[in-house]
Length: 392
Image 1 (cartoon, rainbow, N blue to C red):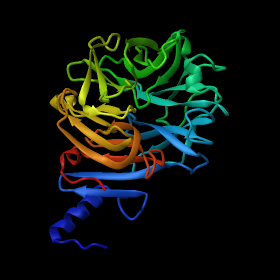
Image 2 (cartoon, one colour; image 1 turned 135 degrees about the vertical axis):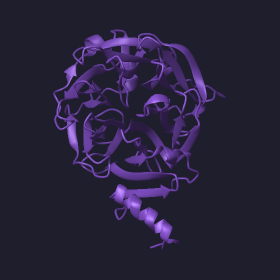
Image 3 (cartoon, helix red, strand yellow; image 1 turned 120 degrees about the horizontal axis):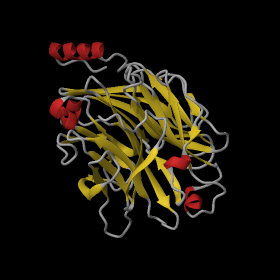
Image 4 (tube, rainbow, N blue to C red; image 1 turned 90 degrees about the vertical axis):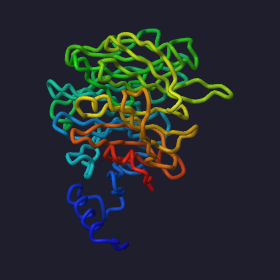
């Protein structure tokens, strides 16, 4: 054990231990302290355990009561995107220090249930969970080209007891998906509720005949989740996306850029809506947000005033699925003031959530030799992003 170099350092360590218990003594819960911030990490989902071959596609939500809900796909027999896949959940009532036993939210036998994208209605406390379903034998390439036995369907479930129990999923494909759309995905990540009360879910789809031309869109509810409608579409080569409401009331959609070509720079795509997600304009690419063509996460900070325009972004900041990096913007995503590498090795999808105390949670895929060895959870203060010390 390394000894503290000074009494002052010991006092700091004891103070942090008192504020954030459970950060040491357990190999599954690692922590790093710096002079300006705190980083805690744990591994709620480890592939090969709890009767699942692989855990993928993380989603994270803080409920109205402050409970942390960590969703993902439990892939029974392999890491493939199709097959026997369940939607699973773990809950935490202490910001991720301890996790509940694994809970299966939706299971349709040998079929695929996934792409979790939850949102909480702050006026009622109800948690709405948007997800997708398809036959386990149908691959994405078959669904996109209409050679599959079935198609991709849109489901919604909800919980009124802080995520303890969930309703049987309801099929809302008729109102959430157009007939000419083939592939479809909700999120993954999280939805948002606007100041107006509208709940908005980021999604993507591929129209029939539009090979390798997926598009991003949103669906929304103005009646507390009773009905869901299709909002604006970004008609570009983009797909998985996240949405935030900025300080001026505009929405920013941050999208996976699916352009493929020799010499092309892979950068995240951006679009803006000024009518609550009904239309999208001002399309552009963000040269700071480099990506390997992969999902990313984006949330607004919980602070008031100017801090409400602070955004947190996470993705593999590389041309390969590696180097999971957290970025901070103080101007609603126009520029990125600071960044910090959370994990230097293989990494892929992520989900962010902001706590009322100003700290941020990140649920993300990582591994030693490939990105899908586990879904890890990190909690950090904003100052950690700004501090020079790197994560191990």
